Image (tube, rainbow, N blue to C red):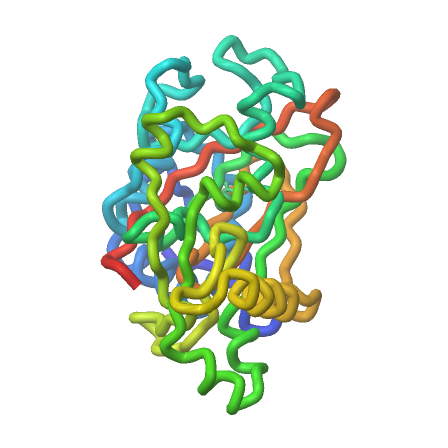
Length: 289
Ligand code: OGA
Ligand code: MN
């Protein structure tokens, strides 16, 4: 089966058609998808009406999956059965719209800050696959920033100065930026700060990129404020419109991105009126950075 790959931006983002992910892919077709994924870092696959099992099966072709962070907490019922599915939605376990003031909705609002999934884990995520099950009629887009292009654009002497720096990442920190402080004791214990290289080399392409985002709090060995200033400045640089692809969702879109070299953020929508239900699978990384 030949797939059709259409570039969405210069070297970043591609739309992939001509395949049905409800069925197992043969090895050649999968290899073509994986090659496009490495090259473009964000793939949009429209018209994939997946259930959770099918989404998990396709995701597993890329490697072992993470379990959702919400499985740490045992005092609350999850809306989805499989631990490999992260519930990125504004509806509760009874499928009722969440009050935007609800603790779960406030937690999910953290997705509207630029970030790389699981950068707060010692072994951060390799890829995320987000399946649109219900989308609002307006708003709720997702934006993606190409950290490889940002790196390539930095002046040579700047790149030299950044190599070797290490950032501390913490989800307790990033959620505090939006005023969320409701982590349970068991979550705080399970989510200590971790250290990540600020510059990464992609194992498949050899391309270098920045590695940062809202979970990145400061630079190890530097005064905290100075490190925050640097991270803020680099984040602003890396998320300029020229490095960004904005995805407006349709139901049955599957979008996957490479967390090793892409930042993303959700955009707001009228949560008090409209449902937005997205199911995410997350492919685990191969080791610490
Ligand atoms: C995610 C995420 C943003 C969005 O699923 O990891 O950050 O637009 N989503 O839902
Ligand atoms: Mn995310």
